Image (cartoon, rainbow, N blue to C red; front, side, top):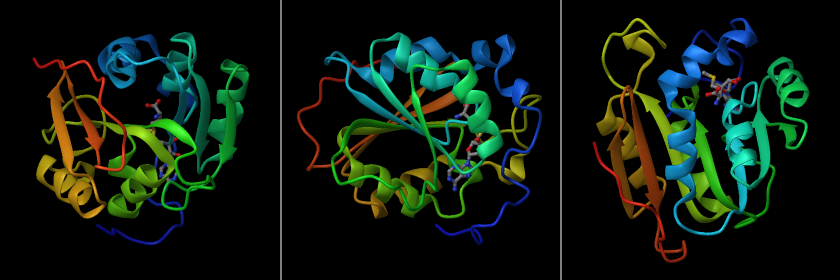
Amino acid sequence: MTRGGTAAHERRFAGDPERLRSAERREQLEVRRVVELSGGKGPPGLVLDIGTGTGVFAEGFLRAGNAVIGLDVNPRLLAEARAHVPGARFVVGLAERLPFRDRSCDVAFLGTVLHELDDVEEALREARRVTRRWVVALEFRYVEEDIGPPLSHRLRPEAILAAARLAGFDMVERITLRRMDFYLMRSAAHGPCEQVRERS
Ligand SMILES: C[S@@+](CC[C@H](N)C(=O)[O-])C[C@H]1O[C@@H](n2cnc3c(N)ncnc32)[C@H](O)[C@@H]1O
């Protein structure tokens, strides 16, 4: 699903970096629970945090014992990420053109990123290509809310599921969290799944 070019645009986050790091936002996003769900029961691994912003989830994955690479198109946000999460490695790049080899990391994570992308399908295809275990996306629900992007920027779950299928995922599981939707995506090329199953 393509929604425009690669230049900065109105859907892309351009606010105060500290807003991404607020305690209230972390609470709303359930960062710790999302990190646990994303890791499954398997051993820690190498997590690629795509659209890492200021590194909120990168920090969570690191604390859980993983090695972490954070990637983002915005160098200003990455400077904040490096200052706050010195244990992770951060690189400038595009989700739609990941600068990594096939199957070079265990899990790819996209935290409230899909709705900002120019090409969701291509970004998911790229995330699938570089992972050995699975791909996780966390997204806002398709409802008007006091937090997060306006409804016109949000993605319907059907659009995310369709993009995931076109990107080559055979299994997509959607878990409803308190305020967010959590998507676990796997393909036949990924290894056996040790993911904790949780619904609410
Ligand atoms: C709402 S912020 C979320 C940041 C972080 N994942 C978090 O939850 O705190 C979305 C992030 O995606 C990044 N982004 C948007 N489009 C991107 C693209 N095509 N490639 C890489 N990063 C992108 C933005 O720069 C921004 O940092």
